[in-house]
Length: 480
Image (cartoon, rainbow, N blue to C red; front, side):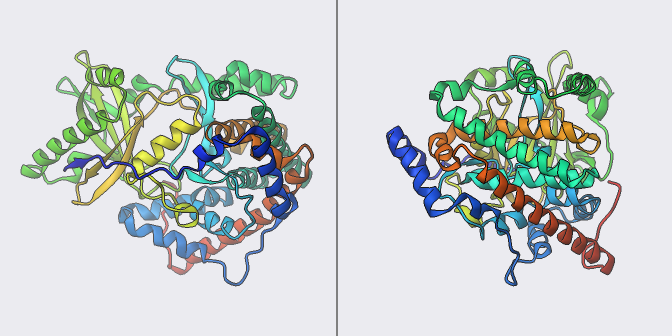
């Protein structure tokens, strides 16, 4: 197993060019875009006869994935229309590419559905709320993230049995929060935008007067639960001490230690050497003081771990490191190929997919994992792939979407809308976007209409997956 760190491609210069414009020019840019692409036009979604087959797009992704894990992927996607949506970033990107674009680009999350927001620990050990998945991040049209978020609210509301009125209110509140927050960030200086983040005090302020006592108790329980998801908790969950050294437990096919994937002997020795080179090259992408911290730990075990819905089948590794007193550090190395959006918005300027993810995450998140880094490595099958690394668990928590009441969904959508606006404002042009959005609800209403239409399409696509499973075209394994 060998590793290399490629140099990034030349920057596109779009952000630098925007920064050189005056404020009046940026406002004029947004208004000109609005005249060219009216806000009402964002309501449009028509599948059309030439729409790409979503199942064909998903199956095409399978060619680079671990074959034995694909039935788990489709089993998870088949479980509900919302689960299908979570795994269908590529089909939606294909559809969004055929919709009107404002022409104003930002750093996109690329997969901004509501379950990709959540809690985690800041380096200062505060609980913060932010976007927490950047596998598809790439520069592109800001409205694509907004539409994916809004549609996820509509789909989740349908799954939860909300009335059409409750779903409409939640979607409108989400998009309105994005619009109003963008206008606020447009009036801030860049440092204010960069420092803005949603800690518990900010969350309380954003939801003041909107939550019942019961809902606030639910948030408190979610935070308390998240704080138990740390390295010691992961040790209890995933490992057993054998001969004085922690070893990862096997839970096939979801968790498979690397020793179980090899035949032993020279192959195992070569793999162990390769893993240490991987860690060494990953270490070089960290800040100097964090290299010192990482050096306090040594690698003792590694396992392949199945994660998420859309990510199932990509290679994700769990690395267990310990210090001299056997205190654990769990890292996750997650495969990072090209973004699903790249074929529609242009190739990333970063040759390494892991670097693409890390740079995008650092641009969009207010605070990021101290061990966030990337590497290119030759894996067990001899194929070179890109990975990004971060802590496996560090106070990570997420809302229980399936049990949310309509009012809770509305407030949660508003929090996600604020967070997405802040993320876009950090590396984009909030002045131009705010000028495009304006002060009225035209864009909100248009995206609400889009969300309804696309949720209908998502249900049809989900049914097509179920039919493909029933016919044997797609193999799925439920309950994993």
